[in-house]
Image (tube, rainbow, N blue to C red):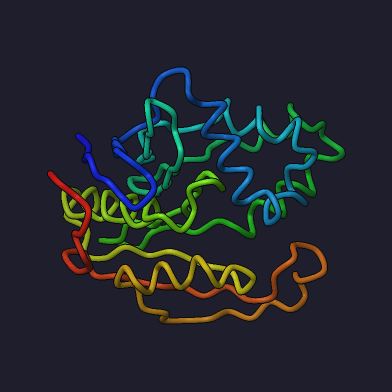
Amino acid sequence: MGADATGPGVGALTVRRGVPAGAERRVAELYWDAFGRKLGPALNPADKAVPFIAAHLNTDRAVCALLDGRIVGLAGYQHGGRALTGGSAGAVLRAYGHLRGLHRLLLLALFERRPAPGQLVMDGIAVDPDLRGRGVGSLLIEEVAAVAAEQDCREIRLDVIDTNPRARALYERRGFTAVRTEHTPYLRGLLGFGAVTTMRRPVGTGSGENRER
């Protein structure tokens, strides 16, 4: 299932569910470009992190935007106990070694966000830098909202860090409301951000502009 849409300066986009076979590396690269600054302390260096992410994707937990067959954006989500990015503790230790892997596991645990009953948790949006600000993120959010509705979820939840005001502005435009901010100044030096805001959007709200189903 997917949607075709157009946007200013973009041309025809196709929004589809799941990661196309063979596109795992491209998805991992986009994901790392968007979230590498946050995940770097746990998964650096990039030449190890990108293959690790690509090898442990749950490809059915994503919606992707394609332009001329090339993935230009994606949104991951967590539902039913599975998120877009996977990888067990054992996989981390095998990839990074036991000595270096243990502290990485502790850092990764800081990012764990489990859905409450009736929630679908978005893992964030990654868009090709050349297409940011052109409506791709909005298309992806609305497709995730359609997934949530089909799964009988009552709301979508996400977290946004204080160093990403552009993402927060996008979420607010798409119907999300901030409900809680957790200040973590002790993490600023380590992870580069000092606060995380939880936002929620009831399922069935928000704009359906630029989507055809």
